[in-house]
Image (cartoon, rainbow, N blue to C red; front, side, top):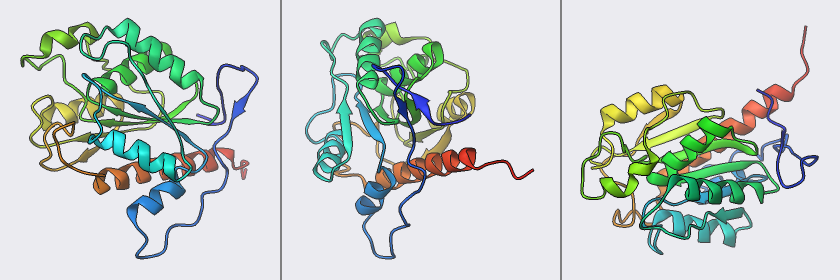
Length: 237
C-alpha cells in the first residue's frame, strides 16, 4: 500500500510522509528526544477512553511534552465521557482526523483504541497511517461494573486493520487478558508488545511519562516511515 495519502477537508491535498528519516539518535540520547525525531512530519491524534484522560494520564503527559517540542498533536474531544455512544464518539474522531494536515498516527487508550479500530474497520482510514493501541478494552469479554457503559461499542472487529498498528498489553489488566491480546493482535495484524505489570495503563497507572511506551511509539513511527520510503523507491527491474 502506497502511503502518500489524501486527507480532508481539502480532497486535493496530499499528505505525504517525509521521505527521509532524521538520523538515529546518538548513544545516550533520551527516549523522548528519539521520539521527537521519529514523529517529525506526522500529526499525533490522542484518542482517550472511558471517562477521558486526566492530567496525570500518560496521554496527557505526552500531549504536553510533544506540543512543547513542536510536534503537531490533536486530542479527540467528546461531549459525554461517562456515557459514550459509538456513533457520537466516532463522529468526533473522524472530525479530528479530518482537521489534520499531516499523516496521522492514532495514539489511543482503552475504549479509544476500540473506537479507532472499529472506525478503521468499518469506514477505512483516510489520513491515518498507523495506530498505537494501548490496553484496548475487551468489551466482548469484560464483565466488570463498567461493562454496561461500553456495550454500545460491541462487537470487537475481527478483521485486519488497513494500516500498521501496535497493540500494547499489560499482564495484569482487568480489561484485557494477555491471551485475548494475542488473539486481537493476530486478527488486527498488529504488533503485540508486552507492557509488563502496569494494570490498565490508565489514569491510575502511575507510569509518569512512560518511557517504555515512548520507545514503542518510536519504533512504530520509524517503521511506518521506512515502509513509505520503500514504497516510494522505483522498481529495480
